[in-house]
Length: 175
Image (cartoon, rainbow, N blue to C red; front, side, top):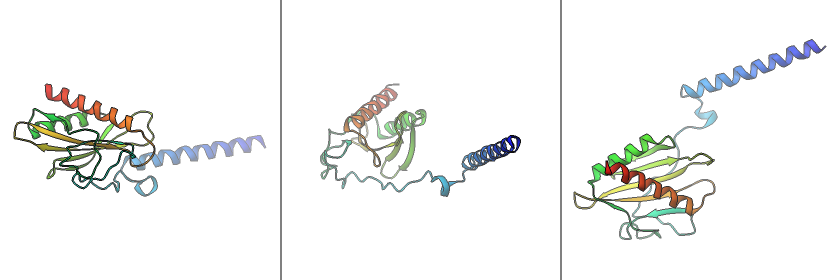
């Protein structure tokens, strides 16, 4: 009797392990979107000109009032003494070298990026949208909007995230 139970338990264990390995291989080869969900999403692009945001939302927005007239902003868009193309390269370099950051969407016509960042300990990623504006050919401004569309977050977390991003981008520009 014990021998039959042991054989059945081993058989079920082997089956479960093989099923897990099969699911892992399917996901690694790019399949499994219907079962586990895809990497794409339904997050609409941000239009800073029509963005409506209040301080009730746990988010952080740096944008000039003339560009974001409908939104309550946390501060003006930071200005950089660098061409828009140089700033774009610094942002791309930063995102490519950060294992917690993924590029979600890139709109080269509007010079706008959407990134997701999931720090250790966070269950859901935050979305950071940046848009680069050329000021005079020698300097540029960076609009930044950080939020977590799903789940709980605090405005202070988004402020810390944006501050960290700006420090890292400034250090890349200084090189």
